Image (tube, rainbow over the protein chains, first blue to last red):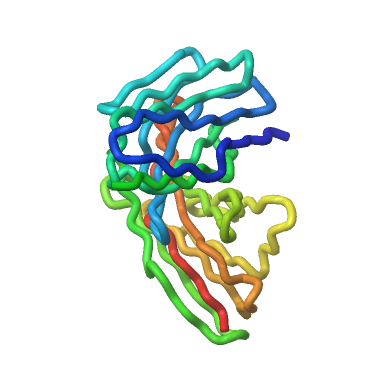
Length: 111
Length: 116
């Protein structure tokens, strides 16, 4: 069974810092990997989707990489802002009908 | 992109009562919707897959008689928590995955259920 781990569980950084969130998964036979943002008590907002054939995706200040063979993905956030404070979830798609989630990294950006 | 509308956003109910959560697809027809549950500080776990016009598929360990899923139309899927107990208190969220692997999942805004 696919297991997804996110490290660290929580992270606090001062505003303006660049930071990296890590995600690892045990089974490299994936279709895609998706990064989400979740604000407290809210639903999930999709940030980036990386197909299994891709190495990275970028959107604004966000860059996600995927190394399928080693079972790792990173989410890089440049020039962090207080509005980036949220829980970041990575999820691995192993087929059309299932998504395996990590437990998330709770990010706090201090003004 | 696909938009999924979920409500209520939060609900408090007494033990033994039933609660219905609705998920509507606003700009697409969803033959399949996915229902997840998230306990505090835990991952989202897939509970069941609802299929329009047919029975839902439940994940192992999820009681189908307790979590009733109805997907009677291409734009509406509902999850009813029957005879709710405090241990059912959780965050429930629905999701849609457009056909093909080029698209990611779109999630509803979630429902915080508290059973007292």
